[in-house]
Amino acid sequence: MKYFDELKRSMDYLARDPRVMFLGQAVACPGTAMTNTLKDVPDSRKLELPVCEELQMGMSTGLALAGLVPVSVFPRWNFLLLAVNQVVNHLDKLKTMSGGGYAPKVIIRTGIGSERPLHPQHQHVGDFTDAFRAMCTNIEVIRLDEPEQVFPAYRKALEREDGMSTIVVEYGDYYNEK
Image (cartoon, rainbow, N blue to C red; front, side, top):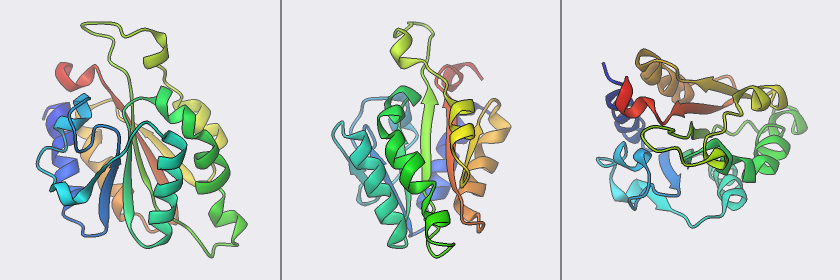
């Protein structure tokens, strides 16, 4: 079992659910290693967005409130930082603010940027897993350290019924190393 293959299998699995749609940068157009994991997902299930991270996260919350399960793709943690307001102050707090009346389920897919074979510099390789775990009470953050964790994490994110969203953290270096 290879890390990349498990990611690809997970995206294909998610795409079989008619409620799921993928949105973000490089979901329908080439641009990151994550793009390759979506190559067999029908184009009709992918929404390519420009660089607009906060808008993307707000759209994801709205889509979830409408009954869809968005897989919101932020190729690196450093990009997801630009959406922290929407994640922490809105998506994470809706269940609490509504007394349990609204519990949108969003799957946020992000990664720790690859450092090998070329280091892209420090603004692309952050790991903010622990910080988001500390800031969020209704979002579970799952870091994928091993290939065997990949599919169960994405299956849990889709099938969960506890009113929580999930941030799934991938390692860019593991796409080719594990």
